Length: 379
Image (cartoon, rainbow, N blue to C red):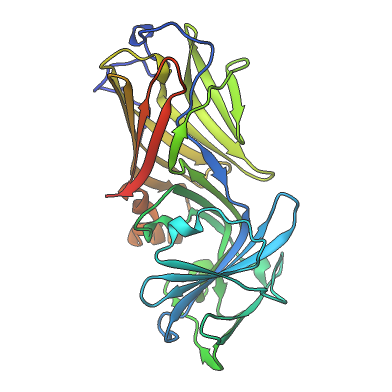
């Protein structure tokens, strides 16, 4: 699929907009309606026991994060049988968009003492225990050996599929993803002194039988366009680039008007890029009744796949409206036949972003900063 083919509805140049789309002179600055925020979570494991559920829970997700000071902390998401979730976390856990992704979620501070999430080339060693809101003891242990024979893969986590009222588009890349091998893995799930059997996975990944318990040794989670209601601050480019709040903008100078060609963010391991075609114009200077549509593509390093869609932009009076729709979903870049089969038949991996739409209304005022109100919704 060529996302950067000719834009037949607007007939604008895909490298830059024509200069006659602007009604006022450039200011030497620009306003970005977008934002990117990185989650500090770096590892996760999901333990499913939906075929042998507890009276309240059927999946436990264990996360490990490192904050800006490299301090490690833990969190457990206990998915309930009724579709809601309870989150048990250490007091200093660095939250991101957990409250948006989950439904009817409740949070409980818990020491999670003696928790560990150790991954070595040949082994996995996970343990966590806590007392839930009903006062019951929950303990989970996962030990896997002979990891060196595995062939990990990468994917876009379908975390956004369950959210009814999203406040972000969660672009969560799971690197070094593996299912636990039944032959070489010991899993113990105990809730209120009762053992539960882990679910099995039906496909023979790595030519072996596996549990549905799966983990990522390296996560890179980015929230795009967190809901916002407030002023847009001007940014001043240098050499057609600008940085703000951990986001880098690569710009096109269209006769002094700065247009957003690409925005990106990165942590110490990974980076994410969002390319626009045509670029997002200088919204503060647009002509009355100007409208345009275009496409965008989101990629991360190592190219495990891409997430793409369309955008629509229009100025009417003193208001600019922008709509973003990831209508093409996620397209994996996976050569292994078994994983192609997985993504083909479990459609949620590729299709969940298609139900997300972002809308923004920007009020322009020549004597004050532009004011934007934006939000995501499911369709």
